[in-house]
Length: 397
Image (cartoon, rainbow, N blue to C red; front, top):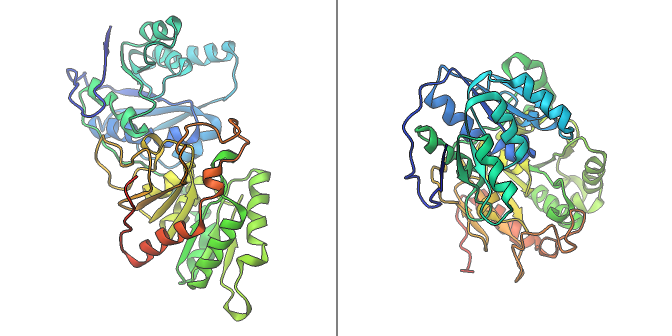
């Protein structure tokens, strides 16, 4: 078995091209953002082997982010929380049904599914120093591996390094979900929004974890500023009860509206749209603003001007990939706000940013001071630059 150490600054490592496969399984049982950022790898496979069937195995609660993806023939959903017995049963159902199986994520569960599904298996292994067992298992389950870089390589680029092992060219295109043509009736859910000619902005205020959150007051101020420009303000969010309540609190805050006849449309669509419908909404927007979350990656992929609010997270690895980006090098520095293409990443300002930790309390329900104190003015400046069609220069950090 051949295991290759990748260079993290180029794509020089290449393998002899493999025989064109008929069936390929892409394995990504991870969070929703990981699944979305694996779509460039799926796209690369389909471009290289257009006659091959590319299936994708994901957690059942993440499959919405690849809805309508033309590169993927079949989505195989698996439960997020499964005992070893259940995982082995799933592995048995996959047994040797594919010519190639590969995974861009460095988990034993992903490697197990790859091992079961195909004779030729490609994936990631951890860096040295993480224990003998963690080092040995990838060698046992996979034919070829790359060292997984969790710090200095963008998530999309990390997954695409597997194309070198297959001898195929990489495609950096992130594919957002889309409403299938066969479900045209679903498009009517947005007909009221699209029926009006007034331009609109989409604000998506609620991330999965509290440590990625901006403040209620900041979102209210931003909504009021957008309304003051005569833009419709449309809030989006998932179906979770806490998320819907948070968005409702912003929309119903009297400070979000303008006085008198100048009140603009402020629409709350939280909990009413699928991810595919949300992507469709964002495609028609003048501007999108959101935190470090999967919907912000979707917004960037649509080509819509996107403002991403970042705090503790590492932008080098997790910053949204601008539409049309075609380099293995990350578009983002670790420290400092910046704009690349249709994405403006606004980072909180503090000496510890980015700490790479789960908030100041070191757990997902804690807040992050860098985001709690991120001024509305910084976001408005970035928004105004997009609306005016100009760049913003940031001081060197």
